[in-house]
View 1 (tube, helix red, strand yellow):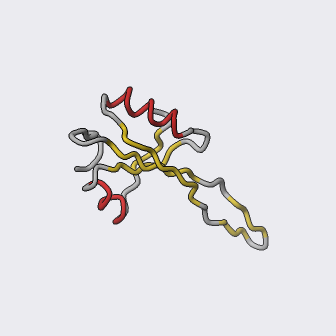
View 2 (cartoon, helix red, strand yellow):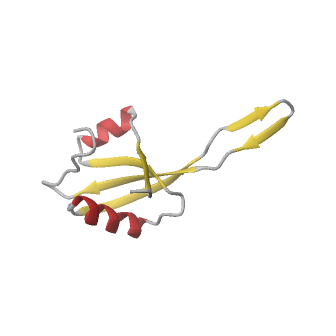
Length: 90
């Protein structure tokens, strides 16, 4: 469960839930195949596909010094028909 950081709740992710797609932030070192096998093992569902992207983080300013925080990784898991994950909003 440490690989899955948190569920992403935006207008787009709520719209994707109606299409049986689940959006969440994950560990930045996680690959698509690892995520697919983890979802299928943990939730006992069949994943149809995984889309991933890196989300750029905002830089923080501290006086004249500007700091860049680490970027996040977002994954969208598409499940096959008649499967759902009960931990997410439905």
